[in-house]
Length: 226
Image (cartoon, rainbow, N blue to C red; front, side, top):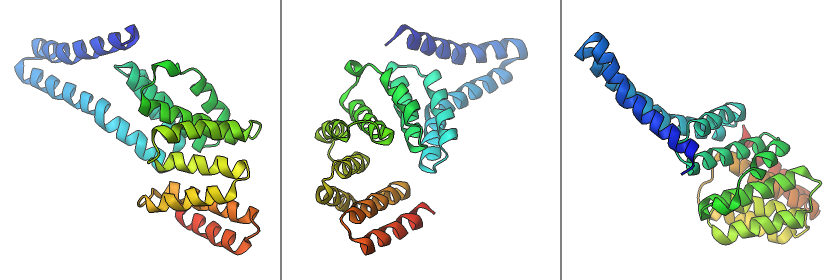
C-alpha cells in the first residue's frame, strides 16, 4: 500500500474513533453516541453508497456526474487498488462520453505492472476503446489489445463488444457479427450495452450491403437507447 493511501486510511480511522470521543467530551455521553452514528454513516457512505451511486450514474449515461463521483472515490481511496479502480472507471466514463483523449491520458498514467488480472482486463479494454475512438490509431493494434483482454476474461460482454468493434474496423465483418450475436446468448445485457451491440450490428450489416438488416438493428438501437 502506498504511503498516501496509508495516510488516508490512518486519518479516516483516527477521525472515526476520535470524533465521537471529542463530541462526547464536549457535550456529554448522548452526543458521543450521536458522533458514533455519524462516523458509521460516513463510512457506509464512502464504502457503499458512493461507489453504487457512481456506477448507477454511469449506467444511466450521466457521465459527468459519474466522473465526479469516481474522482471523489479515488481521492478518498484507502488502497492503491481502490484508487486504480476509480481511475479505470473514470476512463470508461470519458470513453462513453466521447472523450477518448482524456481517457487515454488517464490510462497512460497507470503502471500496468501493478495490475491484477481483473484490472488488466479493464485497462486493456479501455485502451482498445480509446484507440478505436481516436480513429487515427491502427485498428489492428486495438484488436491486439482487446484479444489480450479476451484471453483473460472471455465471458465479459463489454470486452466482446469492444472486440467486435475492432473486428469491424479491420474488415472482419462475419467474425464481428458472430461475436455480437454470441453476446446475446450470454444473457440479458444492460440497455446501454444492448443499444451499442445493435449499433455495431447495423454497421457490420451495412458494410456487407445488407441495408434491411442494418435498418432493423438501427431501429433496435434507438429503442434500447431511449
